[in-house]
Image (cartoon, rainbow, N blue to C red; front, side, top):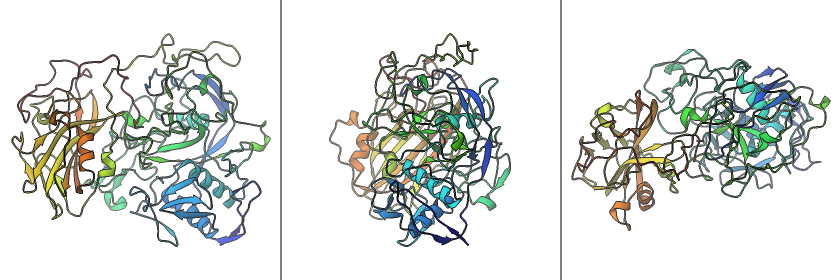
Length: 619
């Protein structure tokens, strides 16, 4: 037992009484040495939603600091909540946790979000679903800053955050969130000659990180599909030790730690940083210990957002896990700004001798001529900022200052989220005789084969079921694509044979907008996950648009109040051939339910936004 006094700084002069309590868990830290690096994208990436925000490349010099080897776990965060609750520093309202008498949400409990791993029984907070060592999720930026203040108080260190203004004092050696520069410097792990794309090198490797492409055994069962922190450590893991939901008895990981020994700097969960997100900040960022801008850019909903780094388990090519990738925390999923926070966490830093540094204040936001554009977007041109000493820079992956464009794809915006309409129910399951849940989709059911529809069967639906509907979709980096819609299935139907015909009513697909099955035929190589969802309904959906206009969003809206239960089957298809999916001769087009055939090669439209590698929400 230990007596501690901790000051939460609800107001500048507010403090709290002494509390007798057990020593809390302290995140394990490692020293990140002082040094300098060339911050920004060295590989010519173009992000259409906020292009140019990773340039100009610029020199940054940082003093030494300690950083959490892992992201903060659910167990660690729960200790903070219980300690704060005992002090009456926080309160729970409608399942959300807030500072007492304050409006900023710190985190969600299960009562507020079905994805939260934190329970509240009116007296204490508990970890749910045996996720003690998984990263804490369903938090907000103030909740991560408040944790840092609490941790500082437990260790007798100065508090960095004023919880009235949420300003950070960078001249205090207390726990805080990393600045964006600190995060990227640490994330690179010392790899600077040449600069690499990922914390371990240039090769994307899903055995080193929990990305959507990963086949790790935690990617099964109900979402969120996080892994325990540090899971990708190069060891052979056993189901008997971890109790994962997947069928594998063993799983061999590769070591995803970087040169500084930091884990999960790519994938698993996005990580809040201290900085506000400003697209053009790199054009005028200070070179010495840059603290971030004084306020944030307004994005699509007219609000500023803090930045997040590191990528995630949920969406995006390689989970958006490039080490230079910048992202405002607005971009989380298809229904931004209301997408769940089930893939966002944080890790802490502890500066060394911050009091001895020159006074550090956030950088006033500046207007950068030539970088105007739509909110949160624009082009940065890939230019490199001159060195502070005026010396020339050496090439670092860019050619002539230009960035290669990405292939154009039509954008599809989905306002009704299938995620919120998921209703798992008892033993209601969906299966196929030719593929297991999470298994590889045989080629014959894709555009590379004969494009057959998958045989499906389901059982265990609620007794009140009057109708079924089926949707097959894929969460692309910037949109949701759907390939098969079938509704008005009678309650007596509990299976669909291969190449089913004459059952139910077909909706359209997002590939060619025809009422037919569109087989997966995406850009390759790379693994993509396709989700079959069967909906048990209390009544058939009432469709008020022409049949040719029944898309995924229309059907979800029509079913929203009729869904009794849902069951899912997830399959993975990996293309190993050409990446050019616009080749009109690639892949047969036959055996569709209506005999017409769909090809996942829509005409290019140069007016459309290029494909996003981030939520359009995964980003």
